[in-house]
Image 1: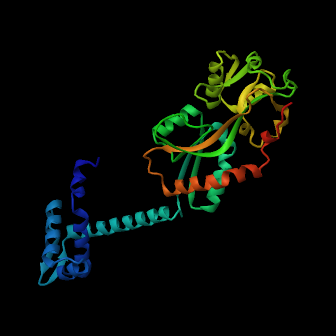
Image 2: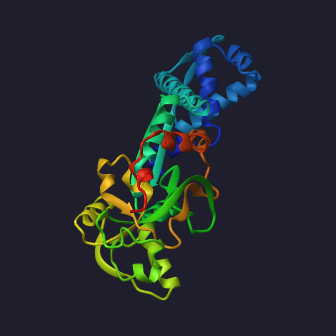
Length: 321
């Protein structure tokens, strides 16, 4: 809220009034200003009279047919011209946003999606060089909270967002697999029953992560409880724990990105796996999606699969042991 001293400047009709004053100062008469602004001369005079009353000062003197500004009038005209410049700059900026020449794109991403989302956004920025982009990674719960707070333009989920009033666009397959070190005792087994898998020590992400949620749902559906060896806060920590022989984990194949160490990992051949999930770009219903964000949605739908498939993402080369 503006401070009380300046609230008078926000009264209805203030902008038309200063427009008339500027025209009078520039052209030197009410008649010429009224003609330029397509007003009657009495209407132009009334506008300036009301402006002076609002500001509590005398804005002009009329000597003969010529208008002469007072010191207060000169200061008001100078300020209104500065305002016109500000509005002109604003309109130019908005015009660039309308034509996608510039703007800001804020993308909140599932932590796993950070292995390809920057590449996707980078390709978009190459086509729209005036774009300022921000890509930040969060666990699923944080994504849900940020979307509820409307903190970003778009949200990339590792599977379908399970909340109401959301517009979601399916983007890419996101298969979930059970990962282990290549010398794990089950490495050579085929069609491992889930009940057998449940006997293995599991490495879990923190509360609020998508992979943890999916795993717990699978155990609950079977009336089982996972043997949790360790809870870790990042996918990198999970991978290191797997390589250390501490257990197995449910993870997205996209977790690895371009990881050169992916040859040390295998996907266990578990019944029902891989789980067929998908990546989704989402935003809350009612959100006024900016033209830039809308353009990114269209770009991602067309280009995400080719961009990802062109790279040599390690996990696609992982086979069952």
